[in-house]
Image 1 (tube, rainbow, N blue to C red):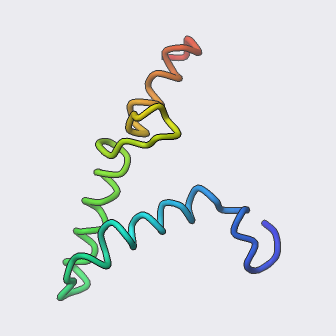
Image 2 (cartoon, rainbow, N blue to C red; image 1 turned 90 degrees about the vertical axis):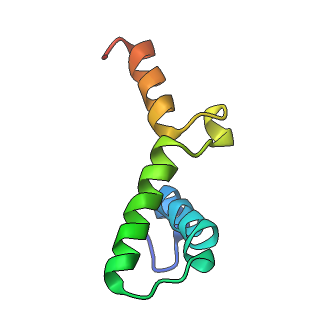
Length: 75
């Protein structure tokens, strides 16, 4: 961990939270904390299993991870 405000230390998490805010939270009304929890859980599932990522060759993170395991012979 670096200094306060050193976003590059957590670039992957920062990118996820940016997507969460702009793709979901700012577009959906959140009447209760429980509703927010359910929405964030649903978004995490979508982000990892369905949403295409250009940096992964337009695959979801879960599919990309599976291809890497198969290539490395760990799967």
